[in-house]
Length: 180
Image 1 (tube, rainbow, N blue to C red):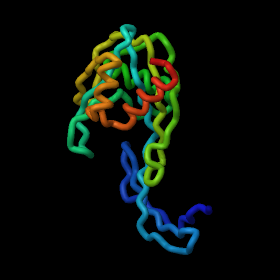
Image 2: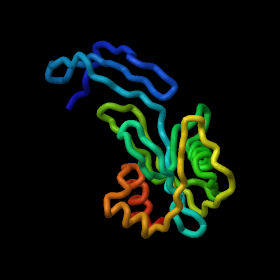
Image 3: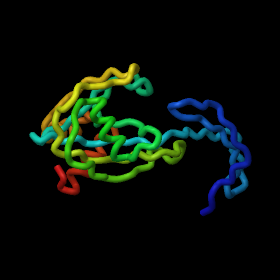
């Protein structure tokens, strides 16, 4: 197999949240794709957060792409100069008010959608979390916190009530590794 050759590239949109790039590509078989769109994003972080009482901290928020509400693990983009570990601790604290004295454990780094996106999500486990702060949401965030036991989370996944892929993946990895 061979890589595609980029013949031309231009930005359609550039914003603090991400860019959209249009590439003209030549495939190894000689075919030309004039308009191949790539979404460029910063890497993301998220975490399955387990409290000292062995409950899971989730966030519920509206997602415009799907035009619906989703319950999921907390996460977001890292800030400039921030490590992934510091970024996830900050995101969890801002979105939920929870924190931990234990360092985050990396569960994995995953390509989000390599067909059209260039970024990864860095997924962590945060254990022994406790409520230490008030939520500190960005002006465009409206987030409800839900704390549930692990069995309830398992049942919601099995019943198709928790459908956000990163959430299901983080939970499944943590269970497979015997971490929760």
